Length: 418
Image 1 (tube, rainbow, N blue to C red):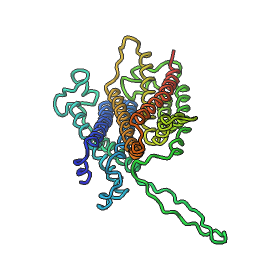
Image 2: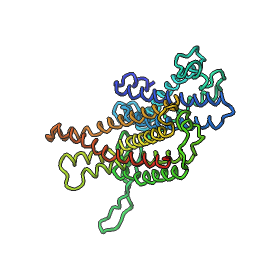
Image 3: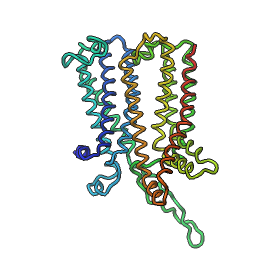
Image 4: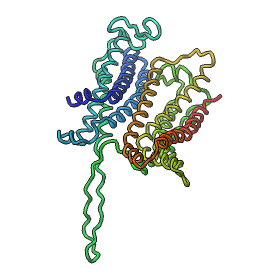
């Protein structure tokens, strides 16, 4: 009930973010139901059914990331005297945000179920058919009964996973107490007195050393993914139908290639905060002026908030460039092979989630530095300086990440060149 009250009184920007979570959950639930429909219509093709189910993991992971970022930016997760007076402490605030995100995902699952049943023809003639009369129903297992337990289980996957991830990500952290020895009058050590623990809640950016701690792991995972897909790819490019037209069909695509791509993408996501922090350090290197120093320090402070979404965007751009290049080489200039509808839906869903996650993280970082901006304005800093610092941060990130994405994409596609 409290979640519904907060949703009714929320600002339009908060409602827009929750609506994006609902749309993303609807897309992920529809892909899961599509895998179930294919399995019910093709009981002999277990490999294709498992492949389609594995294909749903990528949109599901993008939806989970979007749900965590939106839940962290939700005003109900921040500390406030009104919530504290009502008995909603940091832990209950985290649970409240998790319940809100799970409710938004459940609404998306209901919408996905209605669209899925309509496309199958269970609710009448379908006007959303994508490939002619009855093709959508055949792809989704039209005419075959759906198992009730499987349908309910797959619809519950997205709300449960997103809610659990939000609760785990927003749960208040209690750092380890610092023990400082107290010396007596003659220099003798007294028992250590533990410092009072501090509970950290809300959208607090990690410290710089925490933001850069994932950079070596990210580089190692990216290098391992590139080596694995180069070893498993062979000499011939994959078949276009196996790669794009039908999601999850692994024929012609060795599992090592898919695993290598996944490792490289995970490495870019883990290296995102470290790369953002490195970009800020490069801006402030030497004897910088006011503009470079302000832009570099802001990038270093915001690396923990915007680094992971930026890394996800880099992984998405790398995968898109690689797939488009391989698709053009495999299908030829005639364009006989087209993207499958479920593949296009999954790609659009991942792109939407990555863009929305990045924008939400940028807005969250902007709200986190409001005090700093207000202090600079009181000190007499012109608005042109703040706008110039923002433009310099964006330019520096593009100058660092665009060549990196181009290099990783070419290294990924290099083993498939004839």
